Structure formats: structure tokens, C-alpha cells
Length: 116
Length: 110
Image (cartoon, chains in turn red, green):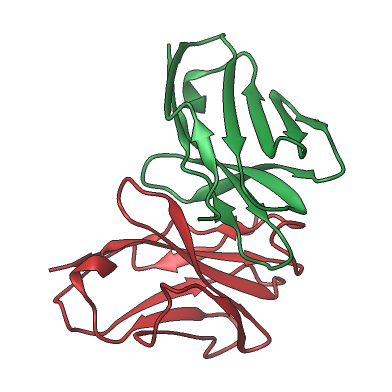
């Protein structure tokens, strides 16, 4: 069964450094998402992306965050200047159709980001 | 907050028993989904129920939805040790983001 793949599985970065998290969504999916989960807490929506544009973003997704689909397969999340509170598990997801409530989203195994 | 709430937060049962988890939400929804998360892994979609449905089955899973009470339940019948995981409800409305509940940690003892 097709999978969403994320790399790296674990990223350790010094505070203030830039980090790029990478995702390869399922190939025929058109809608892409990033979520994060701080250890022991709920899964939180960050951003959705369609047709090379951000569709929606949460208040967490401030100017330090950006997303890009640099080619036909990768979907990246960049954090420009990391803070300690950015430490979390970051999940990429994709769906075939519009409407999170109408279609399941398929999640990768996540990247654990640790900011020192 | 739009976040859903789940109870119980943790549930420990013996293999073969049934497990019931509940989810309450605060907004209007089009659909509600349940996901499983094994420790250190991603979220796996289990089942989706639409707002005009009241009950849905998939294998050993049974989901109910009561939109008047803004609540849903997930029943896992004849549980197995492999069912040990965290279970989350998630729902979407008019937009394409999912709002997740707080999750139930299920431990199935062999």
C-alpha cells in the first residue's frame, strides 16, 4: 500500500538554526498537510497546501515557518530560526481529495525534531 | 478551543475484552474519523463516519455518532495485544484541516 515517507526520522538542531523537514506524499494525492505533536500533547494542525499554495494555516504557523513543493514529489517544511518550543514530532499527511472531513488523510511516521 | 475531548485518557483491559472510547467535540462537523497511533509511529486511519450516519462497522471496529450530543464512540471488540496504541478522534468541518481529540491510551494485556 502506498505510504507517506518522511526524512529524517530524527533531527537535532541548535536553537536559532534553520531546519528543513522533508516528506514524499502518496503519488496521486493532491492535498498536503503538516501537523505537529509536542510530547504527550495533542496533534495540532499547522498548514494545508494545494496547487502550490497554502490553503489554510494555523496560528502556530507564523513567519518562521514555510512550506514548499520544490518538485513533483517532495513537500517540505522549513523553520527559519528554531526555538526550544519547536521541539516536537512533525507529521506530514496527504489526501486524494479536498475536505479533511470527507476523506481520510494518510500520515507519515513523523520527524522528531529536538532543539538544543 | 475547537479541540475534541476523549475519555477515558487511559484504558487497560484483558485480551478478548471489548474496549470503548468516547469523543466529544464542540463545532459542527461534516465527518468524524478515528486514528490509531502506535508508540513512536504515525497516525493510521481506522474509520470515517459521515455526519448523516449514526453507526458504522469495519471488522472489529464499531463507531457511533450522535450529532445532537456532539459525541462519538469507538468500540473495539475481542481486543488483542496488538491493539495496544493511542486512539484519536479527528474531525473536519468546511475546511480541510483535521482537529484531533486528546486521545485514549489503550493497553491490552495478554
